[in-house]
Image 1 (tube, one colour):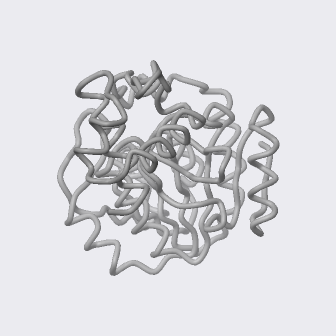
Image 2 (cartoon, helix red, strand yellow):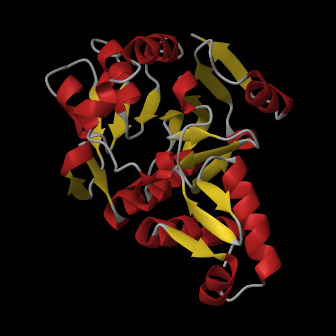
Length: 253
């Protein structure tokens, strides 16, 4: 088991139990207590849990239930609009663009209306934005409908992405950690995001300041795999510098 999967299981266990001791976690995951302590220390620094004497408890952020698409869309709307405007400016005519799951990517799609581009997506909100636009060639990936977040997910979506060769992918996330990890909080979305990264020549991360550090325990990728990061003025400057040091461009919308 990789360290990222082990840490995801720790958070999952705490979601169920609320709290656990180092000994309990070490026994259930079949690793040493010292390994669990290191995991808990890291997850505590990243805001995924709260370190307690002899164990850990779920942090308030991680304990929060998954929100619907509509609620997410209403949050930080001004910042998301600014990020979407800057992102859409990167798209040239005749490009093939993959738009990820999320509310920011719907706003990007809105700005691509009337453009001679190809848009590939598993985002049903993007479909709603572009379904009646004759200028855009729209390709909808297959999969299982996840109704509360207007997305298609699952093995069919991943299999379809293996057939895709795109110029750009606009990637969303739930958090960008100070250590440079780009994270999400749903496994079904994480696997699709990773497949999208593999399908595109350039990876553009769209993440407003609220995503620094955000939430999420599942690692999607590192900033070293991001070609361009588009964010807003309140994003953590040290994390942005990590992206630059890894060779990525940073744009403040």
